[in-house]
Length: 253
Length: 216
Image (cartoon, rainbow over the protein chains, first blue to last red):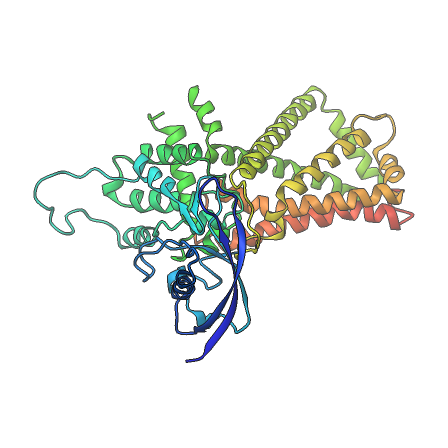
């Protein structure tokens, strides 16, 4: 296939407290069959050869399911393609001569560790606060022992598609983590297995989210548009419902 | 009653309070709109409406106090949310593009909010804290036949319409109402409501400005 040449303006920052700045690189010839991360690999090979510090970025499965990769490309979380993680974004979507501005996900709750690597452990802390279910030990229960309407199972599955990459936080004008929390609360509260902790979960996850310094949801719908898994803001409405029900009517405080 | 405090401290709680106060303020706006529409029927109908309203007496003070409370809650909570949201992203993106979710209304909520706040103060000075012996029709004609004041009203009312274009849909989402069956109606209905409110209110300064015989 054909090659393209790009100008890459990449955010370079040595550590959490170091000041960051953009540095420009000529990409050299990039095959349009490459993924975005492979393009960064090519750049890093060259930088390493030249004795320069390679660009640090997070990645793991490179097949769009682990939620490890992510950066903001020309103002778009995970780049300009809809429902695509950065690792699944192919270079054929860019044109020869394009300039790409590559920045880390920015939020107070996401500390920049180095270059494009951010600390997203806040998402894990919210899961620890309430994103779990209690199960009995012992033998595995029979399949379909608990009747679940097909529609609920489908909706729970749609919410469970969240890979926890943090693109919703990055895209939100308020750096709010509502779509992430909404996906987790929806996923668990739609299923009977999640009901014992239902009220507690909504209260604890929202309270943890607030404490971690994420912003407030103002229904801008940017998260839904940026989400690589297409999680709907219907889940945020469900979270609002779950939270208000728990705060006003439940015995939990 | 500790739960009310913790509700207000939480992000979702504050949003639901914005939504509830916004809903009640929208309903007030609708009654205000219906009252103002009487001006299109002529001077007598409009003056009679104002007199009828003032003759309600003490009940009016209670309603006014309620409105003031709603406005204060909405404004103070809005300011807190705005400041918290600013702090949530201390370093800005160098390229900031919409992913496609934001609207003009949603983007400008804090700014249209400020314009509406200033407008309400001017509007109250014009019509509330003023000589009430003057018939309201003359008050409207006197104020809004002056181009600077008429334009101030028109621009402020455009801000109201823009604020509503996001707010009315958003308040349903914030209290958890989002349903496939009603979403289409809700989105279009909220937009139609903001256009209706904007158009009818703006007609008054426009008519006062261009028509010599309006309310005469």
